[in-house]
Amino acid sequence: MAQQSAGPKLVPFKYFALRNISAPEDLESGRKVFAGQAPIEAILGLDTNENVRDFLLEAEGIKRRQPTQVHLAIRETL
Image 1 (cartoon, rainbow, N blue to C red):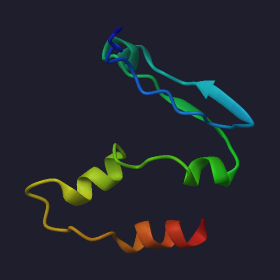
Image 2 (cartoon, helix red, strand yellow):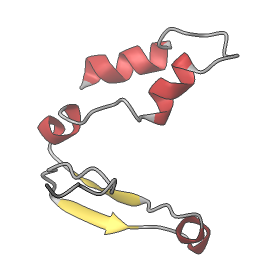
Image 3 (cartoon, rainbow, N blue to C red):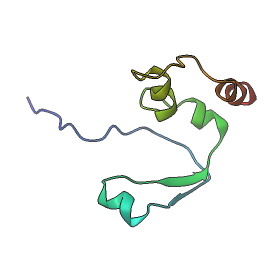
Image 4 (cartoon, helix red, strand yellow):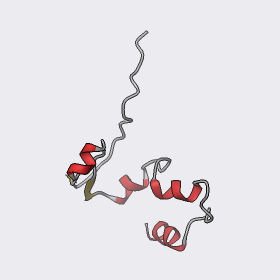
């Protein structure tokens, strides 16, 4: 039986426009940065387990462990 490699997880994502805006420093660090436009349904369908903003709410040593008013306002708007 063939084993799967531990490569990046592929996620289908519908978008209208997408542009790679990675700086040389990003590429040197193995990061890619993208900007674009997508329907809200595509964004709401994304898994947020690796979302930095959610991570910061759960990180050790951080006092605030609840979403801020900004988090709540963004979710309500979407």
